[in-house]
Image 1 (cartoon, rainbow, N blue to C red):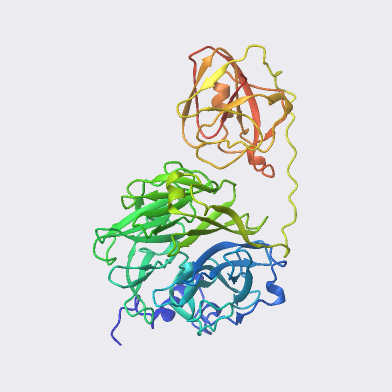
Image 2 (cartoon, rainbow, N blue to C red):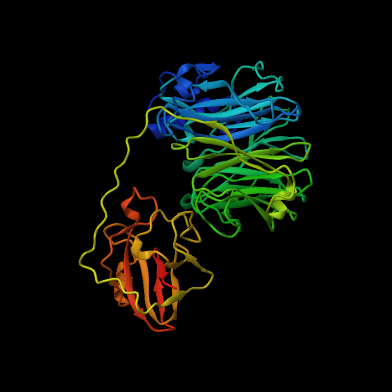
Length: 535
C-alpha cells in the first residue's frame, strides 16, 4: 500500500497504537477502548440527568436554515474533566426560549475512555454535523475526532448516521469552508507533537479527509492549540492558536500546506479558547476576554469587529463581565443575528449561556438594535459527586505590626493606572480578572491603583504623607513583594491579613505595609502588590 503513514486515515489507528505504546508504555494487545465506537449514543439516561452533574461546560452552537438551535457541551457526575465525561446535545425550536436534551454520547460509562470538546457545524450540504473528541486521559495524541451527522437538522429527533472516527487529535473550533469549496477541520494533537495545529481537508464534502499541513507551536508555548482559521481576502490562511501566553498566529500562502512557526499575535488574551468568524458583511467578528491589548483572566467576554481582515479591531460589546465565563462559540444566521454560546462556573453554577446581538451592536460597543439579549440560560446543572467544601485557612493577626497611621494622608499615582475606590467586587489588576473579596473596616474609604499584576512597576508619591501596599507575605506566595517594601522603609501594620481574592486560597492573603513618603518619591515594586492610599 502506497501512502504517507502519518496522513492516511486508514493507517491512523495503527499510528495511534504506536503513539500509545511509546507514550503510555502499553503493547499491541486488544484495541484501546477510545478507538471503539461509543457504547451509548442515544437519549439521556437517568445517570445523565441534569441534576446528576458536578461539572459541565465547553459548549458549541449551530443554527439551521429553518431557525432550530442546537447546542452541545460535555458533562460528568464528578467535578473534574475525567473518565466520567460524556457529551450532551440539546435543541430549541422556539429561538432559545426552551431547550430539550435529546442525545448523549457516552463512550463507556465511568471509563476509562471519555468524550469531550464537542463542536457543532451546519455544513454547506445541509447536514448538521456533531463532532467530539474521544480519548483516554488528556493526551490528544492518543485520541481522535469523531462525527455524527444527520440530514434532518430541522427535526427535534432526527435520524443520525453511524458515528465515524475522522482523524487523530481534538477539534473543538468551527470548521472552515475555503473559497475553493474545500472543507477544513482545525484538528490538533496538542502538546507532545510538532506541527500539532493541523488542517484536515476534505475535497469531497466530508466523505474523506486528509491532513494537508500543520503549524508548529514552540515547545515552551504549547498548550491546547484550539486553533481557528480565517481565509483572508488575499486568499492566505490566517491561523490563530491558544498558547501558554495567550494567542499566537501564523499565515500560510500555499493553502495550508506549509506554515511558519507560530509567533505571538497582537491580540492580548489569557490561555483560553476565543472565537473568530467571517460575518456576512465581509468583516471579522472576534469574541475574547477583555480589551484587545490587555491580557486579563477569564472574564469580560467581549465582541469586537475588524474591517481590515484582523489588522485592527473596533467596538467592543460586553457580553458577560463575570469571572469564570469562557469558551465562546457561535454562528451568524442569514438574517444577520449573531448568537454566541459560552459557559460560566463549570463546577459551581454550571451554566451554559447564550448571547444574541447584531454586528452594529458590536461595532458601537453597546445595544443599538433590538436584538441584544445577554445571559440567556440554555442549561443549569446541579448534583453529582461534589468536591467536599474547603475550609479557608485562618488569617494572621499581625499583632507585632505598628499601628495604622492615617493622620497625614499621602497619595499615589502610576502611569496608566487610575485610582479606584477600594470596594468589594472591584477589579484589582489591569491584567487579571481578580476582584476584591473582602474589605476590613480599617480600609473603608481607601483608594487603590489598578496596576498590572505582572512585571515591574514604578509608583510615585504624588502627595506627601502615609501610603500603603497590600502584598502576600513570602510564606504565603512566592511572588511576595514584602522584602522589596521592607528594603524601602515600609513597615508591617498591626492589621489582620486581607483575603484579597479567591478567599479559599491562602496564597492570596495580603499583609498591609505603610510608610511616610515625600512628594515625588518613587516606589518600585514587582509581582505582586496593590498600592493603597486614603483621599
